[in-house]
Length: 206
Image 1: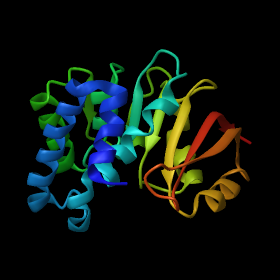
Image 2: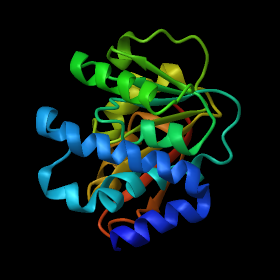
Image 3: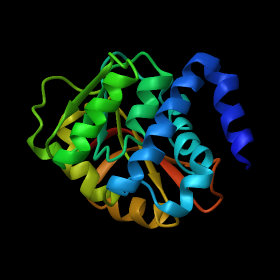
Image 4: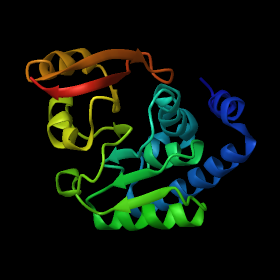
């Protein structure tokens, strides 16, 4: 997929205004990568496919989520959390333990006019569980079993988990099922034929 095709995929579904905000976000990421190594230098030329579309493809998978926040665990540079906040009106809670990254996330959200973003500089284990999230995502944070262990108290039976994975998706899912129950299925990533997205609902301890 070319960069133009990746951008068109998003623009066709979410409109030019939201896509223009993504352009500003991408420009900021590229500029800041020199200082913070936000994304691999080898992916800068393919940022729309490798990072923006890779994150945006999660949004349709959350279409049936009920009311509530989207919690993004280990938000890092804002993938997928900032992208989800740009493409939806849902409140997105970015949970990032590293102070410098958390500060950057807050600055970017403010600069982009994203009033639906809340940033918590904390590990998810230390985040207060006030109400169940509608959506929980995590990109390149931990194996599935570990993610369920540290994040399950923020969800309930209706929470949709969106967890991008590489070649290890099937292996990790089999491992997680030893201790966790729920409805699980695997979606093929549209950006990488070797990658998948584990979608889960009703996650609970066995």
